[in-house]
Image (cartoon, rainbow, N blue to C red; front, side):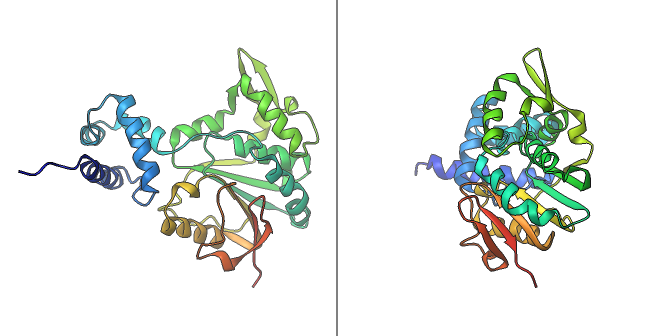
Length: 278
């Protein structure tokens, strides 16, 4: 009688769970990078008190209230305002001059997490005089993350880092001008959300957003396998105006993707690209 390989059993359990999540709740993690998914599901299993992945699957199939907790582990919600400040400085210096030529603008923050990237971009556009003519789309597959983003409230002890990032990004004002501090929290001004549409959207299964001038999707593609990365990049390319702009995360690149020929490198260091004209 042979002995079971625990690793292969766990792999089977994980694939069955991902299939179950897709069939039952229409969340598709099947082509996410497996090493990352495995690590996060192990964390979820331990934190939520299940002996096996299979036990967790049985529970989530029969108890939808567990789903948001599980999604919290499967969708990484770690960000900061003006993260990688040179990226935002490059937006100011290399993208904004082009955007000024349009009478109206659309910007898509894909995988907006808790909203830090969104507020960074809105503040940048306000400082550059572009906010009034811009409609911002903030999307994520995690409904709880979207609620956090729409609330715009963050721990006050994060503001020191956010403020320094803003300064290094070429900020033209004080970040404190945009929020009120009380009870250990920083609440960002509601006016920053007046041109924002928050929406549930999956880069895995959903369709394009039309006519975007700038798409920022940073530190999302690193969790996808190559085929899913190319699917998302095709979605971005199809959602852009001619000569539109795309921003990726510090560890992401178009260099080896199927879409590499569709974009020009605007800044290799800052992972900023421009769609080729045609």
